[in-house]
Image (cartoon, rainbow, N blue to C red; front, side):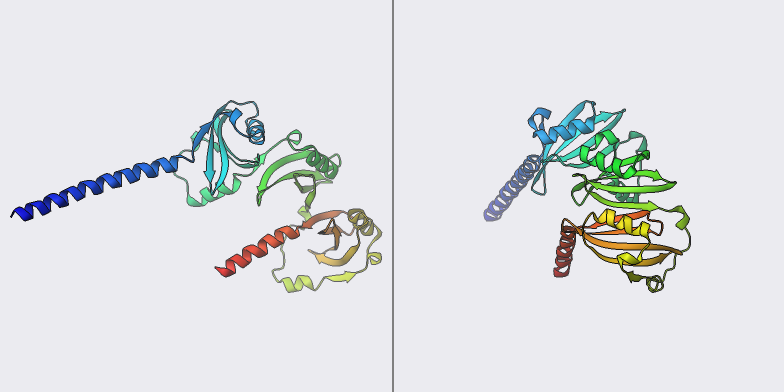
Length: 294
């Protein structure tokens, strides 16, 4: 009987010790998790981060700034109030704007998962004015608009890089240009309302209308536009195509080591200009390789 009592006492002691160790582990884990969140003053953040926060605040009071570590990288979160709405911006250590979220109290309630995903996609899109974009971006947009009124400009983050999208109307057609932060024109697209209609689903039928031609075989207005866009670069290929019953010409050439493809209407109007960035293709290939490995 005495031995049984001693055994029960030992078991009770071990149980108490186990509970104490578990409690200490929880406390220690909580402290470790909270180490990555540190409230800091605006003057304590890097200059590039401070500049971005002040630019986004646009004169509004910065209520709080937190320094955090996400995936091994330092980021800064700032809370500001703009027009009565709480705005949270997240900025990388080099000053890059990672996200901007507006907390609209009127929209409290249940939200579908699909809507949540849409909100995440829109986090990096910020509408800005022409005077708020970098000088080189403004110059490119004004050059492309050629006197037309700029309807809208959005600042976006694509693959970690800041780009600007501007919309304006030229000769009754809506034009959208995409410009890199250094002023490089990435793309130019014309939304031709006359082309709205039924489109053949069979791509093979569309390809039947593609004919490779020489630069001297295209109309003079088309040739002039292609040479202007190439700006001295060698035109590698020109194709004559029929899209929705209209003749268009596609030309390819290299500029600064990047492949550029333009689409020109029969009257010489530039319909689109796209730059094929080989670095992005490399990244895609690496991602594909990683997926294959998995």
